[in-house]
Structures are given as C-alpha cells and as structure tokens.
Length: 279
Image 1 (cartoon, rainbow, N blue to C red):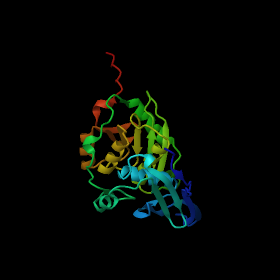
Image 2: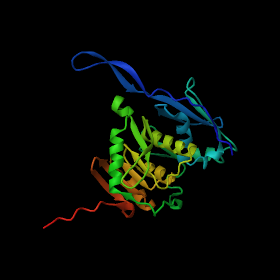
Image 3: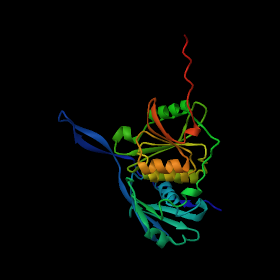
Image 4: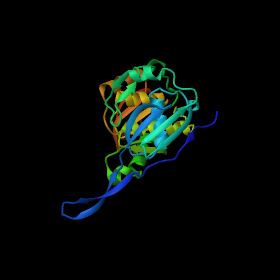
C-alpha cells in the first residue's frame, strides 16, 4: 500500500513581540505560536485544534489514530494542510464507516487543546495488551530525565507549551527519538502517535514522557500506542490511575531529577540496588 500524500506545512514555533520589563525597558520577547487548525475527513468537519503548527500532518494522523477513527496508516490516502484557510484535509481510501454516529457520542475530558473523545472513553480497554517481558531500570529513568532536562525546547524560550517525548529504553541509558511541543499536551501526544505511524516505530519497548498531568485520556492514548512506560513530571488523576492499573501500564509521576513516584505496573520497574553498609 503506498504511503499517504503529505504536505510539509509546519509553522514557526515562536514569534517575537515587544514587552516592557520591570526596569521599564522595551525588550523583544519570543512567544509561542498558536493557530486554529480545522480537521476535515473526506470533506466532513471533525474538530478544530489550537496548535503551534510545527507538525500539522503528523498531528492530524495521530489525532485520528488516538480517537480510534482510523486503524492503520494504510487507510489514509492524503493529508493536505492549507494555512490560508487554517485547515487540514484528510482523504481516506475507503471512507470511515459510521463516522457520523461515532462523532455523535463525545466524552468531555480534562485535556488542554482538545477536550473530547469520540465514542465510549472505555472502548477497547479490555483488548489492550502491553508487553510484560520488558523492564525499566531506575538508571534508565534517571538518564531519560537528564536528557529531557538538557533538551532544547520551545518552553525554555517562550513558555506556554507542553512537551512530549518518545524515548528508547536501554540498559542505564535513554535516547530521545522524537520530542514534540504544542499548546496542548494532547496535540503533542497525537503528533508523536502520527510520527510513529509515518516512521514505522514500534512502541512496545519504548518510554513515553510528558510534561502534563496523567489523565485517563493520556493513559489510554499511551496504551493504544502499545507503550508500556509512561512518565510525567506532573501528577495524575484518580481515573488515570484506575485505568493504568487496569491496563497494567507502568506509570511514574512527579519525575524530576532524582525524584519520582511509581504508581502502577511495579513488576516492570527495576530499582537500583543500594550498596551494602559496612560495619
């Protein structure tokens, strides 16, 4: 099956404006971009996303993937972004069966930048199976957090964004494969989901990192990408914890520096052995 036809229509991440500092000086200051992007599927309007616009094609693909509206990249024929009309048009090869019915049932969520999930939020939870033969070592977690700390980000320059990363899980080491920032954390995770499809990346042994809180929707999206390890510098919600327990995902919150809280999926986490105290 041929790959979908894509535009490459990313927008600049930041824009300079003038601001007055505490000394009364006028200083050029970078601020995060924010653009409306209306998604059409086979000429039917689906949603308008507020986005930085860095990877709009991957965002559109990942949104459809994580909303369970398409099952594979093969279903998509083209993704065409037009910033003059602030729109992205997705053309499928055979249409999406029951699209109207599935759009009619929405669950309002706590997501910033989005806020609805099509269909039943708990659909397919029971069918998700994550690998149980992979482990995350404490040293690898620390390596990931250090890599995130040193990563050049839009947040450091302009603030006002969330970041998500897909990283490798190696003995005592972790490499960031892709890092996406957006005005909403769900846009960032969806863009990574889209890139994983486009680059044929298997998530079954990877680590997903987010700066945002771990809500039910974030946990479900991570599981749908088959990623067993979910890490956040922020906290979590009761529903997020309950679903993570149910799926068996290894979820770590409040992860900054050498501090973390392991909430679920303890069987996959390997803590560094403490040195024996000598008498």
